[in-house]
Length: 442
Image 1 (cartoon, rainbow, N blue to C red):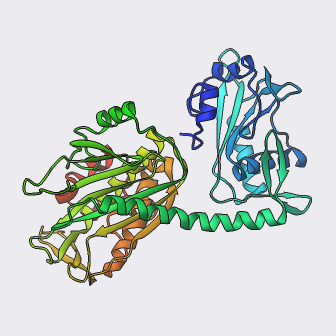
Image 2 (cartoon, one colour; image 1 turned 180 degrees about the horizontal axis):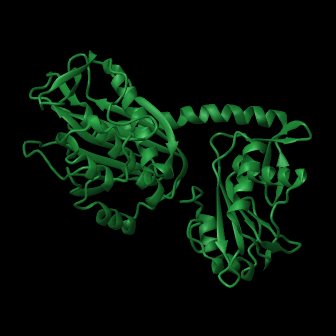
Image 3 (cartoon, rainbow, N blue to C red; image 1 turned 30 degrees about the vertical axis):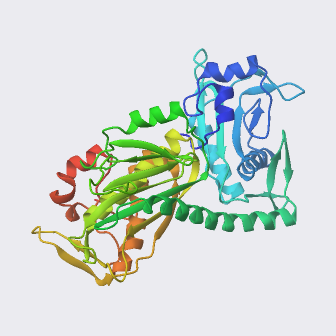
């Protein structure tokens, strides 16, 4: 899966960059599509000379420092920068690996990018090479030019370089941008939590905000599609509550299990499971992890179930961001457990090996800080290791508030630990792993 998602480029190509075909790339020449800030044509491969390697690094860094974009090798252009004639280049794994190696040495920090070969079906071994570069949250990206660091960016069809003041501002934007995304995550989280029934239920709440916003229309057609995509399905990695009701809020789709307390004469509160998914690809999901018999009782939060709910929430939100809203890049993830207060405390427990609830950690918590991590949006949907690694980070941040160091069920490298799963939470651990494309630690 190619990380770069661009409605403009996908409209020009007639497909996503991940799925575009040889004939669709050729059609760019037939339609005389012009180069722009996010599209660059090269008639040949980047060579092996120092200047050619630097050109590759500058072109990629410039895309990452601006709005992201696509470099197509094997397409000639006319004097006005319009695609004119497919020239085709040699398409080999060795050439793709060479470009990755050049970029790893020449660009700092190395941005996220994907290099994809599109074969010419009539001339095997030749075709186009596509270099897809999303806008990077790690910018500015530097290239060594004449023994000094230069920071390129796209300006229309051309490449310019950032001034000293531009570079300073770019570094400020990098760090303030990260904080602003977590601030946005807090806002999305609050929108959902304020609508949850928290009288006796306790929820794990996961929130995702993509660095590169996507867009999904909140209109009748979009809502009907959302209803079909959620009805009767569960967001959990195990069997559990399913979506039963869909609605909309300001700039977002909402789903819950459709339960309403018959004694509730006021506003409808969500119970057990709910989500609010913003049109930009951001969103929050709340999943019940404990239930108090009486308000004010300690909530017992099972460690295995906490891991399952956090992992489920991450995967569900990443699917909305990537597949529904076409968001991309780095995701800022936040997780917390609510409600916990000095009047309604919580403890972390486990049920291994005898099924009786036993306390973990040293703290009975009345004030639990949120946990945060960063991860790639696409990897959270497709890559089991990335999903579990992000789960480990969020769960460790929460569990340390209880005086327990990390989740025992998953590793920071993104693997399952077999000895710490029981049938109480996931059923057969081997079947659970196979169904969700997860692997066990050796």
